[in-house]
Image (tube, rainbow, N blue to C red; front, side, top):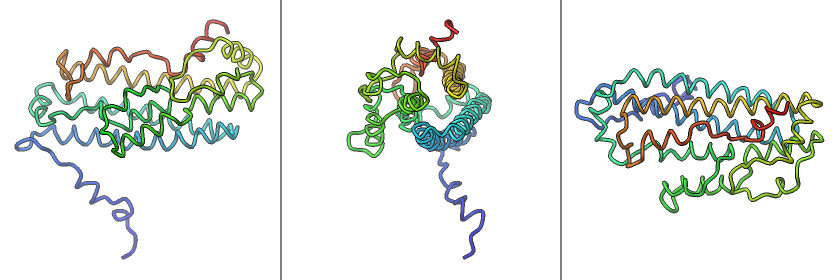
Length: 260
């Protein structure tokens, strides 16, 4: 059989993946399923791009690194815009099928956690949502021990003659990114004297800001849908999500703003 649009993209298989559980089923459950499946596809693409970006940074391939960062940012903007679609679902519509979700929760999205780990927001406790020995847990454990994009960025800085402290280059990769005053000193100098470093650094700031925007819009969407109720799967819901807001992924790049 000749290759066609449908067979190449496996369209029929894709369309068979939406299986509402509610009686009827409830009209908006289809939207809920499709939106979240699309998000998982975008997470997969962001992880794909993150790996490509890391290689470009370590190899000091500035054009590829810049292009990849811009693509990741564009995907993030698309993900944020999709919340507008989800917000067309009223609280009443969501409650009509919420009980069918049982203990499933967005907290169980291992791809989003893996994306956070890739960005440097690492914490071993996030792995506990996945069953021991499952492919999802194995993927997170592997990512926990791998260099993050920030670690790749530090290698990029070294390749561009920025004085990165040795301790940062030899740090425990399972730990989250933390601010470093000596690195900030070096970044201030690079911002003033190295346009290439400044350009890539600003794209990292854009990426950080994009993630914060995603978190904010996600919090407001959840709040307008379930208010202060407990989240699905027994999570703390809006209160927990609020605690994640405005947490910088790359604190050094924000700290130097007041010194430039």
